[in-house]
Amino acid sequence: MKLVSRYHWLLVLLHWLLAFYIIATLAGGFLIMAPMANTDPEKKRVLMFHMSFGIGIAGVMLLRLVLRLATAKPADLTTGHAALDRLVPYAHYAFYLLVVLMAGTGLSTAILAGLNRSVFQGTGEPLPADFSAYPTFMAHAALAIVLAALIALHVVAVLYHQFLRRDRPLRRMWFGRRSA
Figure 1: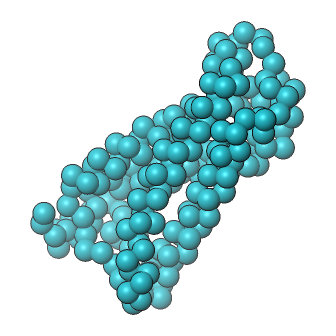
Figure 2 (figure 1 turned 30 degrees about the horizontal axis):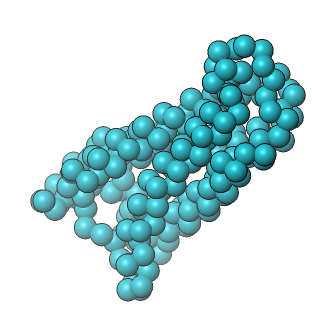
Figure 3 (figure 1 turned 45 degrees about the vertical axis):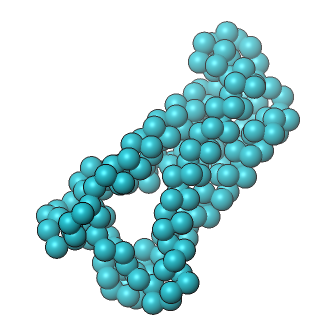
């Protein structure tokens, strides 16, 4: 594949859309849904958005993975530490894996808890008293913490490269001419 200076414009677009929606969905889960009682009628509406975004995020993430594998990408940045440089590709692919696992555990919890009926079909059935009774929900919550930590690490790494190494990763993940 030919060497380019930026990622494909569609990868850039999907990256920033996913960044926004993943952070918003994580924040909604941690800050809005977690403290909300399952008896609160508003929780079904919030769950409907959370679940819809989660399914959409998983689909877009898989599309982005296919595009990332099929398009030319810029040369890898270096941290200056060989061991860290070897870990970077795994960290990037961990995003894809974590998002798919988050969607899978969320969907599994929805099926086990009958959320398709109570949330999407509006049957009037109450939500389960406590989602933590479902192991899939506990996995979903643990994966959310790991994903949030990986996002924080990613932001720190971008800031390190942007301001200390000065190799401009934000330019690579923005729109513009791709020629090297």
